[in-house]
Length: 98
Image (tube, rainbow, N blue to C red; front, side):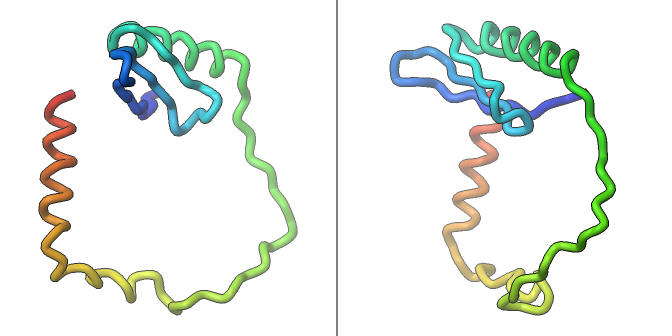
């Protein structure tokens, strides 16, 4: 199974790693490789102790009021915003550096 991890370089040069899918799984290490190895071990430990089940709950959630009837009505609302292209370019640059 694959897990997404977020690596952040701290001001002291160490690496902080967090696993969004497992909020209690975080690592602080001296290097990127060390953080990844420790995270892999921690994830394996969590998985070994865990069981995934689905519960059938007869109650339906209450529906709140929505601003729009359909969520896609706001899609494209920022298509003329010139900063979006730059934002996505920066994201792509970050991905390529990893």
